[in-house]
Every structure is written in structure tokens, then in C-alpha cells.
Image (tube, rainbow, N blue to C red; front, side, top):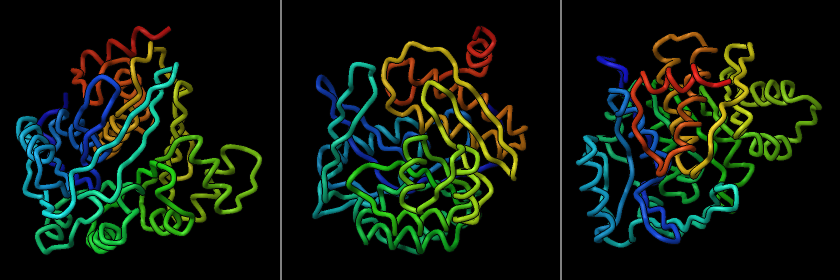
Length: 300
């Protein structure tokens, strides 16, 4: 879709198996983001840990097959590869039951990982991979060496608390969350603002970042970028499943912004990708640039 980009982005956190009622799929937000970036010809890697088990070996084989590097995958001899039970409601919106403890809870700091981060234009991380102190401490050490830090809040109860969120959000240069997470974070931080825009501005002030994106499901997304709001009201699509839609949205948004695209163009493009993923089966369907442009052009 995008050719010859001299850009490298590293994701940190969980790589696992999503277990559905009828099948299982390899996933985890960091891997979904990396796969979307890779599909855009952006160099990407994932810092994670998997078990020395059959599920872990299947993940390694899959990642290699997709063309991603695996030198940042640690192998855990004591803990199993992560699994998540995924349930879809009547609107095909996913909910998750996440096993613990698992291998990605025990990502260990190393000089090799530090070098990986230093050589990357950005590091993308979420709150879930910080639920265990081992991976959390590794992440915090690595963020000290990151050139640009992107937080995908990605709240999965009960795997977070207000203190952890504040620490992670305060480290970030860019924050992405959804409208439900916005409401919860405002409660955590005792932000009592009546309008959506004032809530976002308050979080920006609270965390000292001026780049925040709020996704709103079918209603689109809002980007607060250097003190200006940009909106996309959403694209019509028949939802197949929402797994990975937010991850593809984030990867697409970041890739566009890093290419210095206008913020409105970036959020429009990312919203289209997110909608197209939600309207497809699986977390990582591949689309050409022409397909995305056709999708946007044919929205009424």
C-alpha cells in the first residue's frame, strides 16, 4: 500500500491465541499493529514472550510466514503461551477473558531490546502488558530509550488500575483510547468536564501530551493534534467482527501522521481501514490503497 518508507516501529506486549467458539487465531494488539504496519511496507517488530510449547511454536512459524522478524521474541521455559477466550455479542462486538500468568507477563529487559527501541522511530505499547511487574518494569526501562512513545490504552478489566494508567499515560507522546475508556479515565482522574472536547483537553493537560485520539466505534473518531480537533463521523459497514479493528486503525493513523499527512486526511484514512477490518473476518485482512480509496469514495 505504501512503498519505500524509511520508518521503523516497534510494538511491545502480548502475542497470544484468540480462542473463539469455533476456531482459534493468533493475535494480540502488538502483533496486530505490527502486521498492519508491515502490510504498508513499514519495518516493524514486536517485543514479546511466548511459551516453549506447541502454541508458541505455531506463533513463531506464523510470524515468520508473515515476513516479520522474530529476534525480539523471548522464549519462556516456565510459563505457557497466552490465550484469550473471545465472545462475540449480537452485534459482533468482542469481549475477552484473558488467562494469567502467561509468558508475555515475564518479558525481560536486555541490551538487545534496548537497541531495538533506540533504532525505532516509535514504540507502541498498551496497558495490558503492564499487568505484571516483570513486563511492566521492562517496558518502563525501554521507554527511557524510545524516540517517540505511543500508548494504546486498551483497558481489559481487571488488568489495570488508576495508578498504572496515569504512569503509562504520562510517559506517552501520543495516546489512543475509545470513548468508553475516556469516560472511565475521567472518573479515575476526577475530571469533571461536561463536553467531550473539554474532557480530552483535560487529559492532555493531566498527562502533558497534545496528541490524543478517541475512537467511537460506528460513530468514527476524533483526533486532538497539537491543540486542534479533527473529526471523522464513521463509515457504513456491516460488522463481521471487531477484533483487530482498533489495532489497524492505530497503525494506519500513526503511519499517516509519521509521513506528515494532514491530520484530517490521516484520521479519515485510519477510520476507513478500521471500518473495513470490522467488516471483514479476522484481525488482519489486507487491503490495497486502491481498495481503501474506493471504499471511502463510495460512502454516501
